[in-house]
Length: 204
Length: 226
Image 1: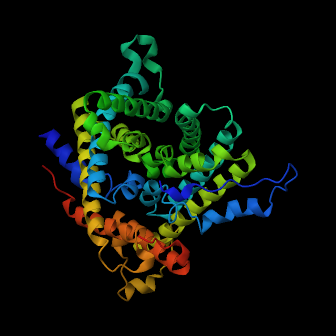
Image 2: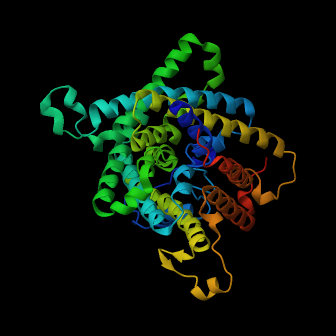
């Protein structure tokens, strides 16, 4: 039950795009066609669901204050928390590399479809954001952190596919010239965010 | 990250170019308007929107970004000739992450409340596209001093949008600026209400959309063809 709650919360209520604006840069740049948006969305789900649990383990067994006490009692006072940014970004960059190689080896079709988006994910704010939110919210178990990461990825996927579908259609509408492209995309995203706010307060 | 970020490198005419030559001044001023990182280059939007509910955190955020962009530009530009091309992203990330850790520790030590308010967004400066974008587009191909100025300029351009958006949101959302009440009590007594809507996250997007609209109507060169 707890898992479903975390999942729904991550997908709808605390949506990465509409509530925290994470990953907006690639969200705006890659949302011109639905096909590319789907590819990037899947890649983001994948990387989030793999890297956040790894960061969770790192946080709880190495970085946190007293986390290293499993090694020996001498380490009980060690707090490496200040290193978390640099460790997380290194892990994310490494996992993106790894994911890229694995996908290339075992799923060449998917690799061809994702193309340039895979390496770009390393600097997608939503991945590091997911890891940092995981740290801040202090999830109790590895399972919860994984479900949260997967849910955030799904939320991001829904958001980018939805905006891509709208942008494909809006090309045929009569938008005021200065608003074309970027401006109208911002305003539509805002309106979608308002729609997503109706999920607020739902508890399962 | 858009294509427009690739600017031609500034021509340095000999070693005796003054520190604030016209070319260098342009580096500082351009990002404030015609090549603003947020509204024109589409960089660094992620954090720009989330921290703009009040002016104080957004000013702190803007200053942090100025520091990080300026010094990471300076550092990368000084070692640009010895970075192997294949691992440059990792090198850039490490330098940026080190600077962000410094900023984060300083904020935690001296502005604890603000640092709590900014929560994860200080850490997210690492993946802020402005920093990486400027490193790739400018610092990798230019001398340290122009790169430093470019970093400051882009940080300020980002900060400008942040401050404008947060001023609008704080003024209409809670009737205050920098935490001080601006809208007089007299208004409230006569039926004026704060527009609670501007405090909510979606409004930040709409305000930025409107800023883009205004900027592009004034400068038709920036209108997208599509």
